[in-house]
Length: 143
Image (cartoon, rainbow, N blue to C red; front, side):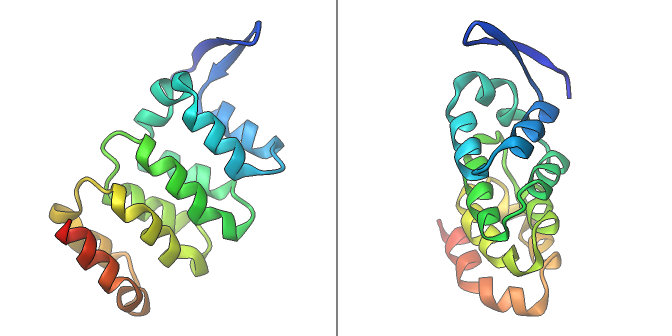
């Protein structure tokens, strides 16, 4: 991803995926850091808006507190233009296996292509995860 220069607070900050990952590695509260950056219009326009599924996977691997993973996914999902099933699958595959259901639950409301790609989402789930998420998926499809 191309680095984009951004002037903030008298200095220059490079807005890029690598800069985000660096910010996350220095953060003591990753969800708060993500929330602040998602709410920053320059970070939103120059990075979050165009994140690809593999980018989200890289971000999720930096969320070291498992219980923060679904929250971080939910903070980022609405900021990504065209957030779809491939994004959800990348997030859940990069997250802790015990957090997959929560990651899907938190991001389904932002999925723009669930109608067309529901089978791809279900194909990425275990039988148990399908059972746990059946009502969530049905509700998202009905919305």
